[in-house]
Length: 308
Image 1 (tube, rainbow, N blue to C red):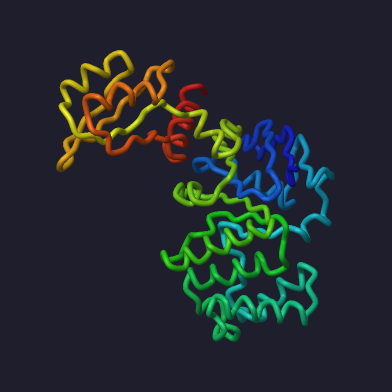
Image 2 (image 1 turned 135 degrees about the vertical axis):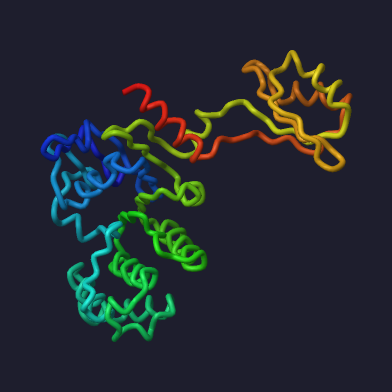
């Protein structure tokens, strides 16, 4: 089941076309990476889903229903531009934001106490936001985003301002949220976070979706049939034997063995490759060279530029 369905959404600001006939679905329980270069239209789409703005054309549906104000109570949104009031005390502000999401004062205080202890920030309750570092303020805003147990959250560059330890802590919280069934939209330029967390992605460039689907299916789609083989043997003999099977991309000496990359012809199986290699070499390992999401991102954005 899809928690969000976006159908033919178009948005224009004066003479700028921000989104052009965007259609995509966000599966319930997924970690959905919303990717694209700066100015691609990601923030415009997020603002429509969170009902900050409305589309000029098209519609958004939430669990099959037209998106409405009542659905915002089930959402959490962490914007890239942080929205905490600098002069307010941390506890007062967190409590205020929790009440806006429908929590009673008693329930809000109980939940805040739990999260403040978990994030080891118990002593911050009376501090003002302006006294906190960027990373410290980010912790507070992350807590206020998830405090009401939303079933759908959007996080725009959530790791900005965090050191590696705190970034890892937030990553683990996202994994736990997903385990409990929360759907997470992650808009980020950190492709390592996409690799680690995302189950699905949509890549937007110049106001259009140029790639979308599950990470597993996309990586399968962009397979290059390249393999890295570590072996001991005569590289010249090996190269001759491999000619009918594909193209050797490189062959590097590494201590007591060689590391070779080969791109197989489409009709060649890995079993055929091994049957040829084993009589003339000792095989230590053979691994498929899988394209990273970063490589796919760059390739597709460059291709999109060529096709404009």
